[in-house]
Image (cartoon, rainbow, N blue to C red; front, side, top):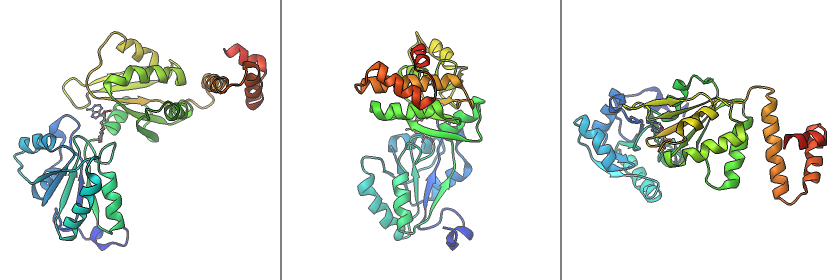
Length: 286
Ligand code: SAM
């Protein structure tokens, strides 16, 4: 991209033959930028995750433009069509239902395909739930890990949960309200109840809520409630040298080894050696 003159001498937007990845609001429609509105108004085609959703945004700002659907179910056959339009000199905007396309939303595949075709993509930045939650959490934000939605398959999910439990960086997770209680329970098992956390509900909307401070508190808060609305979770990283977490990791390893068929004694002996502690200390942990 560096040696591509298109990016160093920009003309008036939108330009022909360019794909614009346009960030849209995550709830509050007033979060749309002037630049995004100009692009949505003036590109040849707006490719949307769900045309009904984008129509609401367009109506609010009196924009009528050609909308086509572009989502994970049709992207494989829509991408070649969009590439053809771009090569013909049309300009295209990609939008998802909310937030930044490409962040747990369609957008990543087409950007990669266009790179291979040497066609330029320009991002018109907008709201992103992950960043909005991180910044409002008060947790360390200069270095962080974004996990998106955790995998559903247990073995993959536990691997990520273990990584989160050991990571010194803040982690951001997306979750559906239906599955939040299960996730909180798992975070408790892997990180312990004292780990700092913030659950952001309905960011930028009328009933926005930030629920903290630690995993114990948040579990208690949601205990007898039906959870509705959109949820993003921010988990503080482990403090350097936090022994409590080492214990949790050892307990988890012990569970894995015994589940795999090792006797408690053999698993404890192995873990004691691996961690440089006495076998009796492992027994004390359980
Ligand atoms: N592309 C979007 C972005 O940039 O944030 C994310 C799309 S992903 C399919 C949807 C998930 O984002 C939701 O399940 C929720 O975890 C999170 N999310 C979206 N809007 C939110 C909001 N207003 N408040 C809290 N979380 C939100």
